[in-house]
Image 1 (cartoon, rainbow, N blue to C red):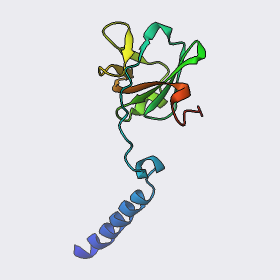
Image 2 (image 1 turned 90 degrees about the horizontal axis):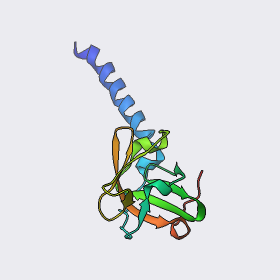
Image 3 (image 1 turned 135 degrees about the vertical axis):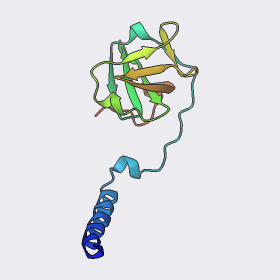
Image 4 (image 1 turned 120 degrees about the vertical axis):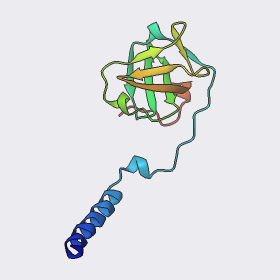
Length: 127
């Protein structure tokens, strides 16, 4: 019985090592800093379009390029890269970064950490 288990255990160990070696680049990076609230709000009905830049960041378009905003989420939101529509959870028709307003992507609730002007945000060029 032990002789039969040895190859299985060895194969299992090799598979585990292979899985660890193929971790995606994002998970290898150092933990990112949490965004700081800027006191900025966006009136939801002014949003004309949006684009997920990554699992933490959204580009919000509102008319002209000067009105574009970057939303940084507090935590990774896996769904935002793959959804066709977003919902917003707010009490007064605007989303703000200082009161834990939420973007809902499918069933995932993503807390807004910071909203900044696109021109003031580093590394925000869309793909």
